[in-house]
Image (tube, rainbow, N blue to C red; front, side, top):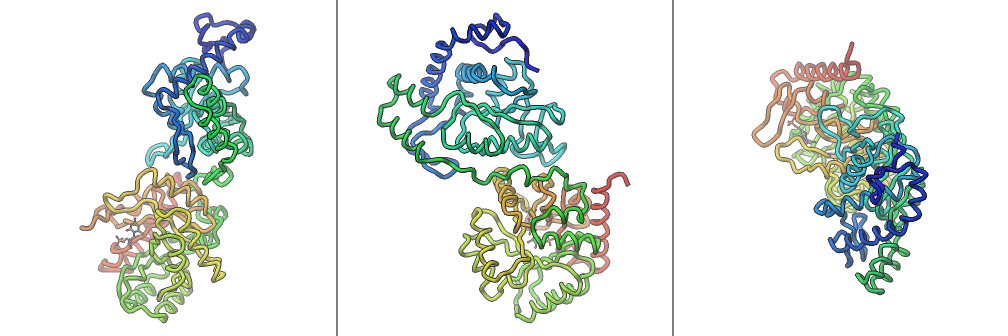
Length: 513
Ligand code: S5P
């Protein structure tokens, strides 16, 4: 794939020598290479791409040294010489490859320079998949089985490289190697090796410290501090969801029965089966304050729904009998109960909110909803409550994207929330959201509220889409509230939702029939 001529050997760029001459020249130019590397290190220090002090790292650990190679985009000459040196250093001994891919975002300009100057095709990994159009993880032209080299700026634990590695492999590319500018020597090489990926670096943190000491840019005390920090602080991989957990199958074209095999959660498998058996993907949301009204409606529509969603905290006349009757109806009509509690506190408190108080939610609700804002502790809190009760068949939906206008769910929040859902997919049955790209795993269920027979909105910010629209946008289960509860003909409307949602689902899984 790559040209037999060396194009990126900076001192001889114009000569484009054959390889045998190139290698002779290489030994002569080794000194010059080392000099150029040392000048680059000094330059990076000068432009504040490398700082000393006390910094909180992404992984939550404090560090006496911090790299911010993002600044190089403001120094084109530095960016150029860094990219050339990285390529020159690794180029001759790499595994064969057809493409290069920079880890977003800092390594993107580095990979672009290498791509243009060495004439190697490049691929771009999307950090967030698009909500519309092709839904690709990787942009660029490639065939299944093509080989790809990963390029990264700084490696700590290696988790960012592994995310790019996973997405490239998910799209069918073969990846064996990564080249990086700086290895912080904190376990990255070992972590990557444990996932079958080799890594080579242009320089290590130790080399950088030695050069800065030699050039009088730092004192011995700083060098010792950094060396001590490296030897004591190896950083494990955190929150990385390996490839095997992301099925290559596209859930949008899979049947609910097939997807029941893909989930790790007992209650998700049960819901998939109920949907397939009853031919309904309708969840009725009963936001009523009266328990009798709720039970009456549940018995009228129970045969047409897979899930009944309630807000127990708005019921004025709550009693244990009400719960007993509700659970009996769920059994009789074969639907599950979702308490839309939207837990959002620290693990310790949600554990109590879930299992204690007047409502004792965990004793009767098959499923609950959870805002992931507090982080993984909220899931551990809910699980801890179940362990004490020895309950197995419970689960939760994570609210990732809300249906209301002006909601504050940013792209980064959504990405992190989906990651949390995938890491805990034994307990998280699915994701509450509006767009299909947020549910990558066929074992997870997309629950979409904001549904009426026609598009529209209410006066308090709720936004509605039609049954066909939401199913096309990935909804596995559609949540309908006032679209049913405020209808003149409740049974007729429930049946209309059931039919339209189910037909849209059938069309989605077999578009040509
Ligand atoms: O983003 C969301 C998430 C949920 S769970 N938007 C929502 O509307 N919900 C819930 O769905 C909301 O709490 C309410 O119970 C139901 C929608 O009711 P409707 O009457 O607007 O259909």
